[in-house]
Length: 402
Image (cartoon, rainbow, N blue to C red):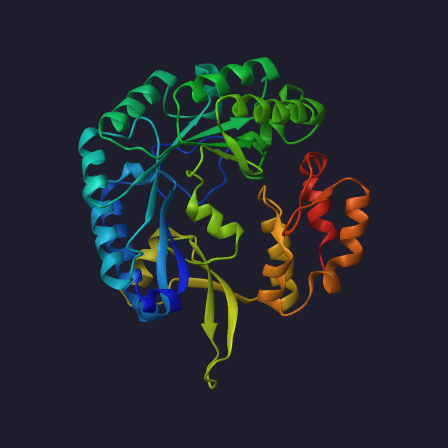
């Protein structure tokens, strides 16, 4: 790294691929099946958007890239290579420790794609397994069986990928602590470098919402209750620790040195640019008419694939929403996101970012939460206790300033 690199702000890049073979019954992400002709037009639109943002090249150094979706692995391998080539043409990448992640669903992975991804310098794969139980996979509407997942996993192993994540989902309808333990042990026995473990959330507008949304729904009784969910969560922490995984964030576990750098950037407030339909960005924008005035801005691209393609074909911005964050909103996000991490938040980092002492802004509420056993002191600041994780939403709400 040269001196110029040290003066530039770190940046993460997110690439949204909104296509999937079939939308899962629980999914409320912006994703949809589409014809291959649409895939091709979309990739070209993505590349056009990337080139529209190359003017920020001198201000940032890209540390991570993340291909998410949808199902990025549904695209031809050459498409991923074309997108990464455009990124390298428009942005400066960190020369060492660069992380490029790609979400891959079983049933969409081939030897050819794995080889092309590697040529494009993708060095981290995230497999959406969700469950090792075929009945649970069918319930979720997944397109694959556990056996098909194993085939994809072994192909990646043979291709030499040494940084792999497995996504798992707990608190499924009909799931018990015992059935969850079988899935957890099966996944851990494969020795992935990273595991992401999320509880099922019933989102409005999904088929699951009609079935499981509340006591009046036909299958609501199949969902584990809060006590069972807590049991599953604590079981997850204990079991994965036996396999050598450390929880570094509420829902994420990794072997030493394999925490997802891109996601850590989100939680630590690193700037990021999102490309593609529905992609979000969090970036520092200069205020017109001033030399140094800048404000954090959150913006989101239009959530309509054909409209996104048309805008890019006609040279228009895909941004549909733009919001300037107040200092208070930035402080709230600093707390919400930082407390998700095992290490918690740093008082000195708070002061460095905002110019206020932590105690001046949050001293009283922090003392109250510590008295309730929800927070614990660290050498640098504070973190959630195990009890605090159980009721983390309550803790986060306590740090609202408005």
